[in-house]
Image (cartoon, rainbow, N blue to C red; front, side, top):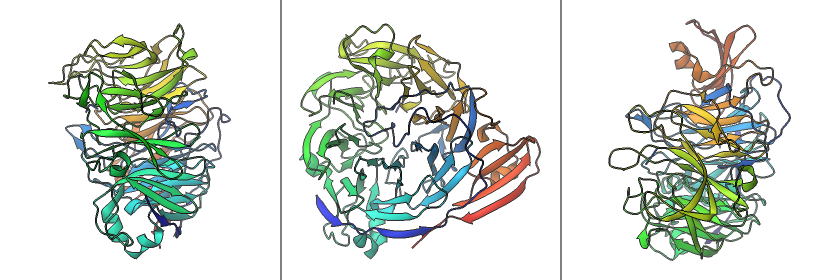
Length: 587
């Protein structure tokens, strides 16, 4: 929708009793694609897997990502954290549980949607306009899942591929300081970006702070970037120190840090507040030393600062050649039809290169150029982006909403602004007429999953359907309906190790597969009209049809307890089958 100070880390340990439920054995294809460890798939945000992915023809299972979605005029101004998937084919899903906050992470067996475990987190959202995401990550060895916690802390769930594990709390400013006054830290500091893990299992993320005095920090901790190794000293550096600009207060909300291919540096954007000007920054990974910071400007005029919004999720993408791509809004908004720009820089942030003509709430994906039939240019890779042209009142667009593959090494004249932009290689128009505005429904995507084996991408639309976009024919597969058409903040698509694809529509995550895949006969929770009592008792449910035709619902009841229900579809009868041990953090 458009619109370095160090602290010694002594990990505090928490116990957690994880609910155990009866689960089916994993059935399905051997892993063919690869894991998906973070937002946009990996530390460079290329959103690319070797594949092959499955054609989205039926819903294998689904689960809500929000138990209390708050609609505004029928639209959802809420960003949901990306699911992440292990090589063992387990799916870890952030879930919002309250109207204004409160989060749980739920783990499922991807092959059948059966619950593995559930863990509530005490994470507190920063003050916001659109609701930010809570971004989790798997560390590279997949022995830990990193989850945002309260006060800028991180909860590490051990053995995430098993039913039972421990939870360890860590703090970049020192856990002993946190334990002296948790309430003070919880009030002062909030993580505001997804978490990044590097090959050394060091965590990086952005946080915001009110600057209040804290134990160990009488002058407060200014908002900035944190570095949290699993062993040793944590550190942080303020946004103001990174840029040399005292007005910079924090990283842009939802801006997932990106790591260079050699692991030596990371990139992140910072701003003062929502829609203020900002910088794209490069930091040394070992100690957060600033390497470069570039003030983000409009390609039409180098003296125009562009807005760096907290309402979007744009994150840096690093190309195979080290070039960096970052999406922003345009100066004199909405003079570019609210499309913004996909800014493009060399790895040192010294050279400004040709931008793309769309950047709002958009993280570029990387497509090897040999996947696009008929491409005759010289670029090693191409850039896939959302390419909407908004027809909303006062914006000026024509509603011809597309996704596009662009050539970073070739140029064209943008027909809207006259600016020189990346050349369009192929584009595809949304397939569904917009009933309220000229043109077609928006592509509802902030990061597009790319399957290199099938030369295609998985794209999500506000028409409530998910599609495969095949590059060779520049065509869309028949859409798989996931939800009613819903205006919403943009969401990512994901591809799992067995080729299943994942998309979020109307606050529900759906796991999708080809017709006849596996031996399961699965019914999506989102496609069943539950009896009222089932809706009241069975919150946070995933659906699985048994051989007798009953719908078995497994999920969360209240905050953290796993339960199972069964009822005959079409009947108002519901029976509570069993409830597991409750899951709560305890000190």
